[in-house]
Image 1 (cartoon, rainbow, N blue to C red):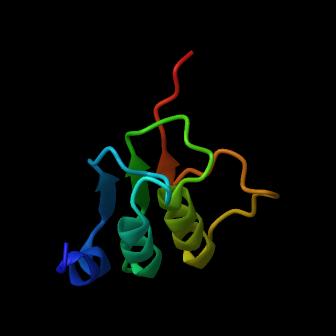
Image 2 (cartoon, rainbow, N blue to C red):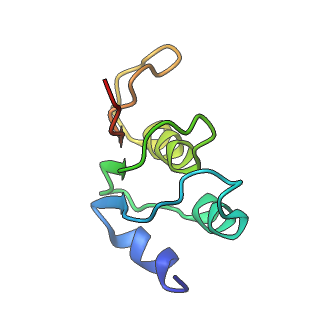
Amino acid sequence: MTEAGPLAAQADLLVNATAVSAPSESPEMADMIGRLKPGPNCGLVMDINYGRDDNFWRLLAEKTWDRLPGRPDHAGRPGLPQLQTLDRH
């Protein structure tokens, strides 16, 4: 995990393969993910967990989306294309 920052700066895709998505589940991981700065080629942040309203991966996806050049504006960003979540229906 100590190498996450430099690796994120080079990644085209970030995938959460852990069971953790909410700060209450791991404050340490939430802090680390909150400090990540994905590089300019990162076009997707994917979280395989679902059902967490307080989701630090979603916040990372929003930061990534906001800095992408030429992104279409989405009022309120419904259905952020950068964050893929699995939902039960």
